[in-house]
Image 1 (cartoon, helix red, strand yellow):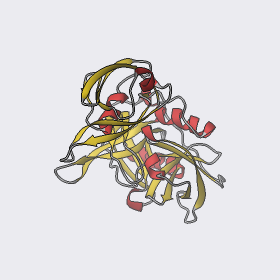
Image 2 (cartoon, rainbow, N blue to C red):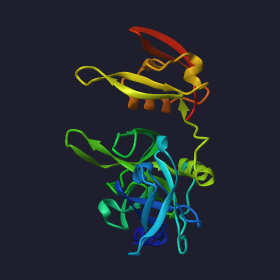
Image 3 (spheres, helix red, strand yellow):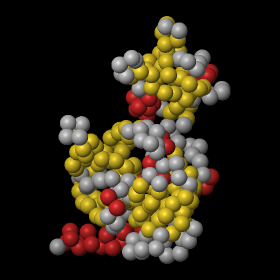
Image 4 (spheres, rainbow, N blue to C red):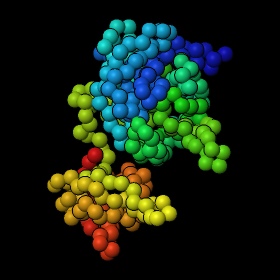
Length: 304
């Protein structure tokens, strides 16, 4: 009964802070961030929309909301409701205090089923996962996610992963898939840690943009290059940021990036995963294919 009582207390305290977000890309979840009406969610939940309907727990009347800003590389977005009256901000934990084995609850609106709660534990920390490309968002590589056994289903994205103190330790973002079964792998979900959420959301609330991401970047616009069979062969450079890291190293539009720091980069997704493990200011060898020849350049990484 002690654990059941703890569950019920946390659910009562936190559910009022979890909202349903309706956009043209579908349904998702969000967490009330402050008493000014800001709501944090996933960038893939808001998609390309600027305006949204938000339903708070227990209410059948949607509130209008507008986009404040997104940071696609970490799949974070902030929206703001026009009428903040009665909103209950969540309390965000220090995710550096999270441990494997901690009991957690996931709260959101999976499959449009509002105010759904599932339970589990923190299964692992520091997982690096890549999100797929969709019609509404580019690929994102998420470093240092929290893996949980709490069920995460479509619509849970942007909701709350909370500890038994009722504090948000992460924002559920995606579930693992099983290619052989062609669906979600049960009991393997991932959440963006609360410390990452807070750092990025604070910047979005303040300015609508993120200028201190802590994420390494080359400063290029890229696309995956495929062969005649449709197999990825490298990362094609379609634009280079003036005076950025790649520009200063001599990378040019038309180059094909084939490796970074000795790791092959056959696709944009793989390049993102490689960069996610590197540090801003780190100098790394980048091998490019240009006019049929390969050339190695030294690039000092900038910041996304």
